[in-house]
Length: 104
Image (tube, rainbow, N blue to C red; front, side, top):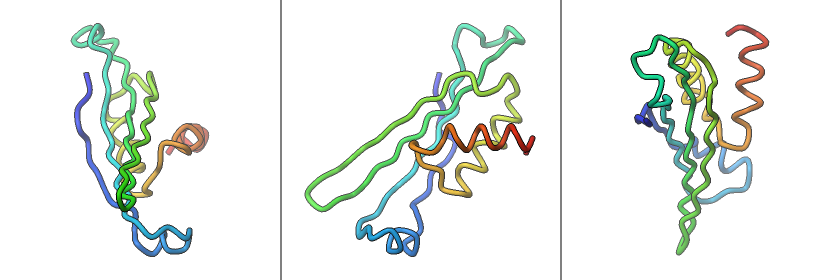
């Protein structure tokens, strides 16, 4: 089961620094394995959708990371960090590894 957590547009200044002249939206979703709901052994994952609004073209990139944690509060913290730091699908796994190394 996937539920919407939050979304944001990448800051215009960051896009301009990268030479990008079109808006990019990031959406973050909380995933939970439906078989585990109510079992006390829930496994939470993260799904990210990046949408680039290129003139005359819409480019969508997605990434699902299953089984990030067994703790829903921990998952919410990770998703908040993703949203605040505008984490994209391509670097999401690295960010999760760094978070667990530093025990955020």
